[in-house]
Length: 208
Image (tube, rainbow, N blue to C red; front, side, top):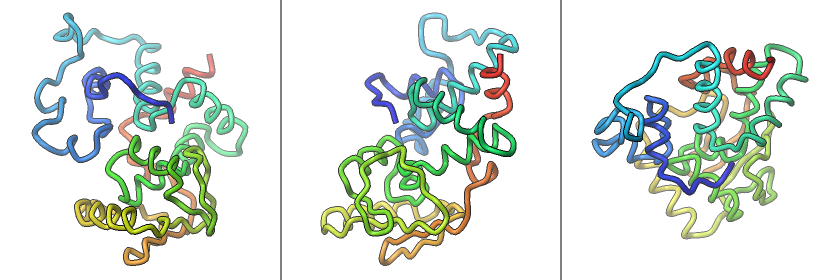
């Protein structure tokens, strides 16, 4: 996940949809889309009609920004998806969902993917009993992901689980809430991700 230093609410306004880059803030009245749903900049009131290339580019940009990736990182994942058997777009979504930072986010241990990146980098997560600090680490079926048993971390995660208890859990996990241990029971599908993007347009863009 690439480090962001610019105001992330501008990214949501640019795409015209909620990308949920600031966690819980995105669900309240302070969300930039709720307050000012127009592109940033002095000409923001106008949303020009996009060409075919423009539509493809916007879908790629939305996906990159949702997962917090740079162009180089995203290209690596696309190339890997293109070499895998099956539909490239669906394989791309599967690979993105399997990233460890995304898994931590999907388990509701944190409120956003950027927070999940820091959570992983600070070695607060173990996979199959080993501490992993690589956000792009890909989980596999049967992997067991667990919060490192340190009191401040455990309290923080339990508080977040209580805050986000109304959000549905991804169906490709089995989660033991009390012990904060999750197991990957199957690979994620496009429907599990629930992304507001059309991945086929990304494939068309990179195929040119």
